[in-house]
Length: 78
Image (cartoon, helix red, strand yellow):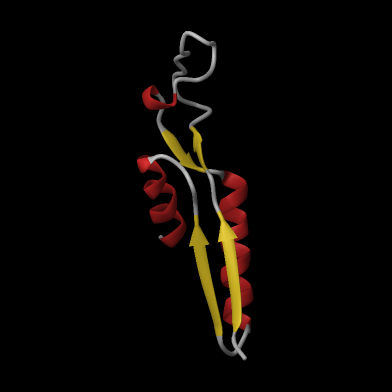
């Protein structure tokens, strides 16, 4: 039986970038650059290390979010 690891990642606003706020005082995510959460990068790395040690392992990375969230998946795959 093969080992299957699923890692959920989140596309988050870049904390070092300029922030713009909407009328309701929330961050205007359309106007802010995003990136893969640093904590999620650690989770992906850990999953890959576990998979390397297993005989037959598969790592799946998934996310839910806006169209730009694809960038988080690309980062996780790189």
